[in-house]
Amino acid sequence: MTTYLILELKRVVRDPFNLLFTVGIPAMMYVVFGVAMGWGDQSVGRGNSSMYVMISMAAYGAVTATTSITGMAAVERMQGWGRQLALTPMRDTRFVAVKTIVSAAVATVPLGAIYLIGYFTNARATGWVWLVSALTLLFGSVMFSLYGLAVGLAFRSESSVGIASGFLVILGFLGNVFLPLSGVMLTIAKFTPLYGVATLARWPLTDGGSINTNTGELIEQPLWQPLANVVVWTIIFALLSTLLTRRTRRRQ
Image (tube, rainbow, N blue to C red; front, side, top):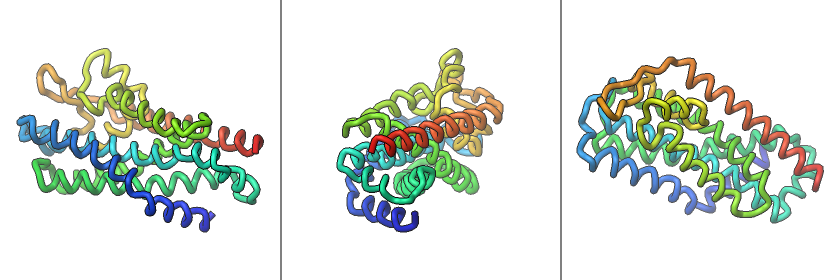
């Protein structure tokens, strides 16, 4: 497992273009919606609106990074790498664990870049909010490494990474990440995967509140809802990843 982990990390370092994509888009969205629009200085919880947008865009960047890394499992299978791994004594759970660890390491790149941009632009918040929100996103993004792995193992083409990333855009809108939701849409958002991670990351800033687009006030949300969301979806993605890995091994 250790040898395989080292090989995976080296492979990621040799292909930096994917990292540029996962950093560039969320960083641009933060600059456009969190800095350039003019409402960034408005007070929100323990910081301002720019900080709220920055955390949301960092969440999208982190989960995109983890999803793209583990989604490459489909490409590996097409290239015969999965058949080679099936001949080794490495267990399915360890294969999933290695993919998860590597993707979490990669997630630190967009997280660090977006938080750095936020620090030198308009994002303002109490000191500990920066640290706690970043750590929450790092651990929360692990769930989406399992999501990417499940999608990558479910499809037999190189388009699996694009499919997984495309669904993330939809989940971002539905999960209260790109645009603050209220009413029925906010209720729907609570059942989507990205809602839990983004809400928990913004919790240090807003105590769980979501901005009401009509009044500008925070809509209070109980802590158990995003926690339950993350736990349930992590279990679902973990089970799917393990089952699909075993199915792939049997075929190979």
